[in-house]
Length: 308
Image 1 (tube, rainbow, N blue to C red):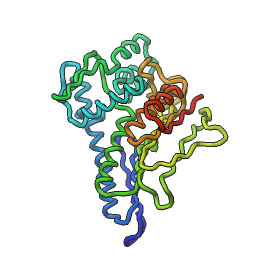
Image 2 (image 1 turned 120 degrees about the horizontal axis):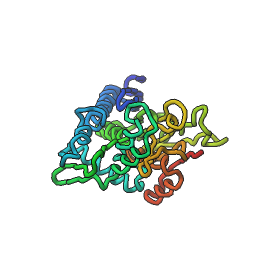
Image 3 (image 1 turned 180 degrees about the vertical axis):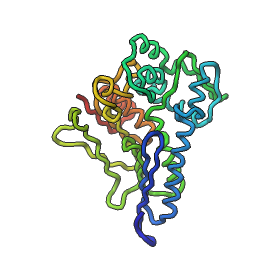
Image 4 (image 1 turned 90 degrees about the vertical axis):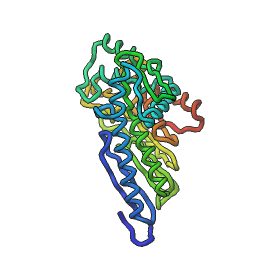
């Protein structure tokens, strides 16, 4: 934190959650307010993880994954709204983004285990358990039921984006007029203006050594964020080791059940992080064709795709 009196100050706070580092950078003239707001925003991220993590046995989502195949499960209103939004985004992307991909994540060993090349028959069984046609939602009762054996919701990047959106709501409600928050640098929201400019400038990443260059001689694009979010999905950010399995870890096409092979990076700027996260995942899966679909769905949206 810097500054004194009524001069502008900068407050930075960070916290580990959702297996990544969340950081808040706030500007204003009241350091006590900024610090309290930043702490509450990061606490909200932790609360979202508490009910949305599929890996916490006591979370609402873990309970749903465990019990919904046996009958309707009443879920917290926050989770119900999240699932409604996820279903909408899955439909908009033609299934390229789909949180019902959980059975495939498990089949490929991408749920915290060691990635393996599964038997094709096992992949096909998992693929048949994917899709919102197997999820029955009853809004009046607030219940969710799985109609296919083996179904499992995995929020993916959208969970992190949702946590960021909730954190920003907390910051705005606290009266913070300028700030930036990111989750692992791959998802970021910025509002207001930093002290030295009109908007927040973010540079899209370049691939690390050993990966094909995607931007060419002109270098990585710079994006100025003004009251918007930017999400980046990249194969190298989800790889473990080398070879065909390591290089494709956690990046699956829900429609085919196979790992992504054509793209290396995708980025999207949209108002909310949960939607930019969903669309950046879809663009990584679908490439420039998915970008055109996004432009038709949301005219004027800025997006970038790096393909080998």
